[in-house]
Length: 321
Image 1 (spheres, rainbow, N blue to C red):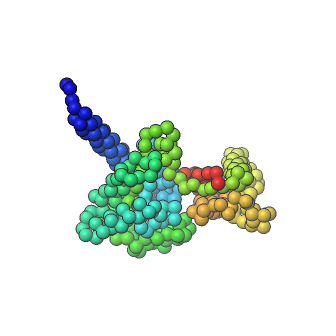
Image 2: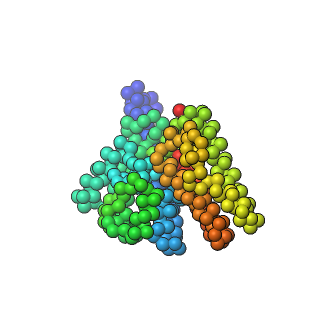
Image 3: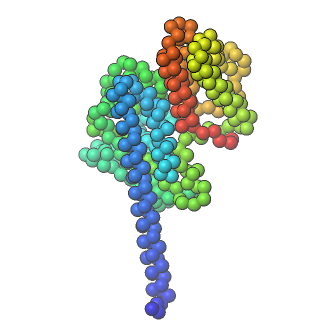
């Protein structure tokens, strides 16, 4: 077939458009699959936890386990994924500028009668370098959500929210109302861009000396946790108390135990929603060692302390300043 140049050009353009359209469709399907995966996992794990332990456990789950599940889904699908809203439970989930625009549009559509869970946004045009597609999907307030996000909360639930999320603004919703949205950024498939973009954790810039001191402090925490566990295995409650007391509230630097750590000024406030409960759990272990010495109670507190550490690592990553 002997085509003229314009005909060849038109074929090339058409082929390019078809390939671009196919790539867009693949990226959109990938984003939707990730949202379905995350939503299913969160719902299943949350309902099981609430059924076993009651509504207060939902707050602990969302604080300790939900970020880990989101990070695992992001890694599995090779993208960035999370949840946000115009009213969020923690500052780390506040919407980016592009997400805020979409949320405002979703809100308008919902007020006009659209079902929140049916709302979708997809864009592959004018995106920052390294991003192939952005996607958002509305989240509706369902009846079970009202225990933690409704207009009237049980006092234990309200206290748990206050303890974990001092900046909370995600209450006062009604059933069927738009509560927020899942968001996804699909990276361009090139080099290491995908693995870099897939890390959804909040970046915490630090100098090299701050990073070194922070790592030393983390090692100390792990050593204390290991010492408590070993002492419990040996039923040595004196050793349990000694190890736990190294991390009880008020025992850190700047709390009468020497000058403040250099890295503390670099830590975001959300960091302390994990650090404080971790220290409180070690305080509970020390109290148990001085009191009834119940191994199951001490182990449960130790598990909660470890969960705070896991949640912190799932939410934050230290980067060079």
